[in-house]
Amino acid sequence: MRIANRVANLPAYVFAEAGKTIAAMKTRGVDVIDLGIGSPDLAPPDWIVERLYAAAQDPHKHGYAGYYGLPALRRAMAGYYQSRFGVALDADRQVVALIGSKEGIYNVAQAFVDAGDVALIPDPGYPTYQLSIIMAGGSPVPMPLQPELGFMPDLRAIPHDALRRAKLMWLNYPNNPTAATPTMAFLAEAVAFAREHDLLLCYDNPYCDVTFDGYVAPSILQVPGASDVALEFNSLSKTYNMAGWRVGMAVGSAQAVEALARVKTNIDSGIFAAIQEAAAAALTGDQTWLAERNAIYQRRRDAVLEFLPAAGMQAETPLSTLYVWARVPAGESSVALAKRILEATGVWLTPGTAFGAHGEGYVRIALTQPEARLREAGDRLRQL
Image (cartoon, rainbow, N blue to C red; front, top):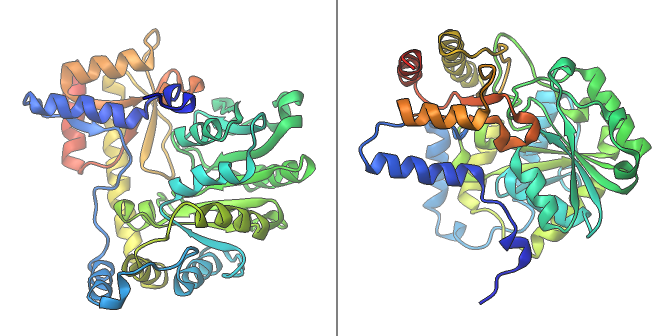
């Protein structure tokens, strides 16, 4: 048999490959502390799980639940944007439920990118931005995230030829992997830039409710007129500790929502109704528990920042996300450092180049282990 060229030439997903290595080490008896993938280790509140259980008891909830998301879930998503960001959305025209935001990130390229088109992506950035463009037959053009600019791209430095052929642009703040946070001035500039160049501005915002030190993350849709040109992706994975439930949303431009939904109706059959009901409950229920959850992550962040200098690394204090973006010691590549640390200590840190060429010189450390395990990782690194 012959597989398609687009699959044969597709690089392996870095976290899947790292998972194989870690699994093999564990089989050999190595106590690996995995600080790689950003999957929350904490559970949702009991009342969300109980809502799932109750809904799953209904024998009528096990069939197809519709393509766009239950009306109650889409209303809950719109209500969340109204209460959280002050953004008014039409739940019927500006909201579509996703099987996790990763699915929508992939499918929006199918909706907007033709062979030969260009898409602008942040570098370093979430790998699925690039892979989705490649699978659609387009060409991803990196926008370097420069530390001197607060890990925001210089939009005016984008090559003219690439911009002329560009159909969409990806931005992601609070940022994975750098943990950078945006200014409203930059977001307004990005909206104006997208309008000027007839781009769909795709804004990935799954970490907006994982914040520290009083920081409040914005939505791109808070910029006046943004809903004309922007489609924001969000998820219950990080905010509600529901990564495995696979519930996300795309909201904003009605034209973009309709195009994305047209792709989805031909590919998937929606989310299990009981999960949708529990997700609606999560979005509309008591949100006060998030403060204590974020305090747990903040203590973990501080534990990582405490041991980095002894390990020869340094990092800015992140105000959001599940990550610390740490600069590696001078003279060592991020891949070499990550491999050396894993082999010597059993601690896995994601090399920055997993997120693009401009990630060189950094490693990403996920805060998805208990504080005691993070401190143990620090003890191991100090002994290098």
